[in-house]
Length: 157
Image (tube, rainbow, N blue to C red):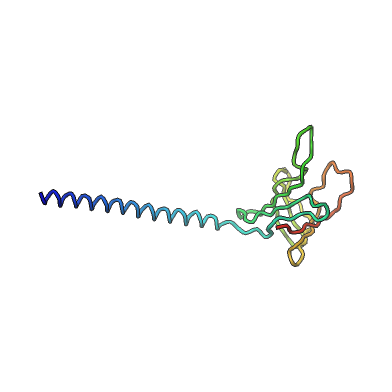
């Protein structure tokens, strides 16, 4: 009888040890997986310009610089309001995401919805980074009024 009791205890210990080992291995795998995911996130580069910027004169157009990007070229999103075309509410011309590269007093931009190439425009950030001047890269094709060659954007966020 004691032999059966001893065998049952041994089996129970083996079972508890197996459960402990499985739990430990699962825990280690979770740690490795989470650290791998974290290290992939940290591979993104920080954007050279950040925040949301509003056009100073009319206060309608906004540029949102994405804080991180995939290492190729940073991205900003231009929001220009809406227009009505054939009874449909559509984003205004040239709204959407752009890749950009900054240089000395210029910015080269590429609109995602364009089949063209990068175009360079004047760009100057003020010393305290609260506003910038940029060449007017989104002149509307239906605008009848004379548009300025440069626009001033102020930091909103």
